[in-house]
Image (cartoon, rainbow, N blue to C red):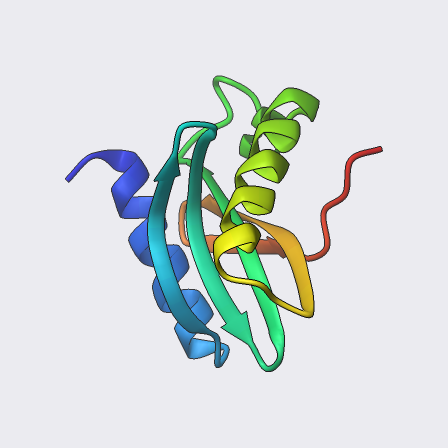
Length: 109
């Protein structure tokens, strides 16, 4: 299993344990990819998963830069054009070894 898939699998288990319903994994469109689309109550949640066992290449959260968020937002807009939602948000799940950091409501600044 590739490392990214391993991190995504851990992220899915984490989200399910928190009561999220997983709608899609690795949603691809011509604009890019959304790692996980989940439902938390009435809110559709688009999740970017980043992981790493060490900080040799920087903290995983630092790899979610402005350009990545812009591409992700375009994918989200495309997804919502096919699957409308009243409420939605973009989260980042950072998997570091055994720890998972859940950053809710990430926005472009």
